[in-house]
Length: 172
Image 1 (tube, rainbow, N blue to C red):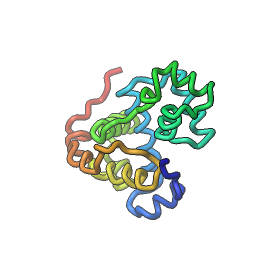
Image 2 (image 1 turned 30 degrees about the vertical axis):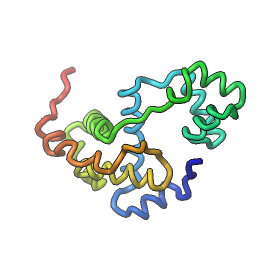
Image 3 (image 1 turned 90 degrees about the vertical axis):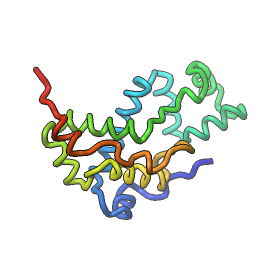
């Protein structure tokens, strides 16, 4: 059974001590955008299952275990069946995919100021994104796949290239 978060976000931010809470919130928002980009928007069934999981404070691995042992409530089991099984709920993204989603979201929201906003939050390289993600993983706010590692965030792109040289003002 996966561990439940023992610290709130403010405690994690204080413990890490390098990034403000706004940085953590932005990274979490971008995680959802990355999953939507990679896997498409959540289906109605996935949304209902996610809501049920949140109401009952159940993690993905627990749903899989209960599915495999026949312990899911009948209506939830039927919902999972309609989705094609619990593995269809896995919306994992790689460190590289997340870094690119963060770059795209920052440019979309702040344009030429994106690099400055991120720098104000002490995010100046993709490794900083990895540090935030793994602080959330280490504190059981997020789950990782066995193959995930903090090295997945190393040198994904250069901030000067991504935010300065490559930026183009969108045409109306």
